[in-house]
Length: 265
Image 1 (cartoon, rainbow, N blue to C red):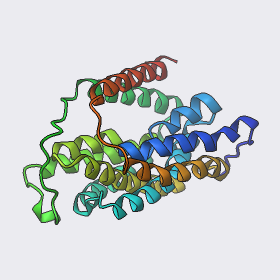
Image 2 (cartoon, one colour):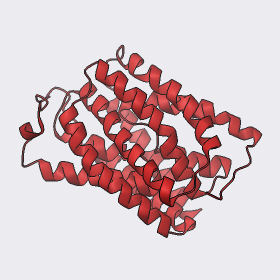
Image 3 (tube, one colour):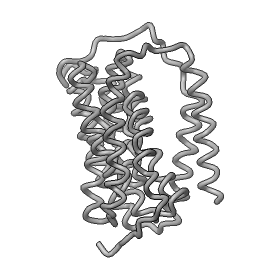
């Protein structure tokens, strides 16, 4: 590992950024990895490869703490978590390997197109019927066989996104879990577990093929871990609101704007 970053004064904002993203991420079903690479690249001038590895490493404590906290509150379905996680592991390792072969500029532009696609998907995604929730499977064998291919494909795509771009593939995972019509809090908790597996797999692969800066990881991860500890506790006191659609559209438009910036910068 011959990469070395000089810690600048601005880098000491990273714990606060990590805390805010970790807090919000564990309340919506992710780990915040989607936001870390653009923040590191655009705000702090970190190289794309280092940003990817740093993002994955920083969200590992978010995923671990968030998963345990959600599991204690019975918000995790282990059969689905394991199934998505197996597919995500294969995707994350593959994505990290491809990332090592690509030029940094190509990675940033490809990430921009990925963000654009997610923004469009989020904007046009059919609204979930919050009044219809199906029983969660107790075993992998209980999962509907017709839904199994879609689960594996979405899990694989989420893993590829983790390894290639340093994100968690949260939206892809959430799409698969919403498809199963599970209760909202079970979707959130299970998603946190799945993206934790993706992040851990992707970071492990980047230890071999990527560039790592452990000082940036410490600064970002320390705040993220604290936010992840508080997020599930706050979620226990939050009830699903009726403004889900409006928030989704605003989030989608921000994704599209970010994607266009990354593509044409």
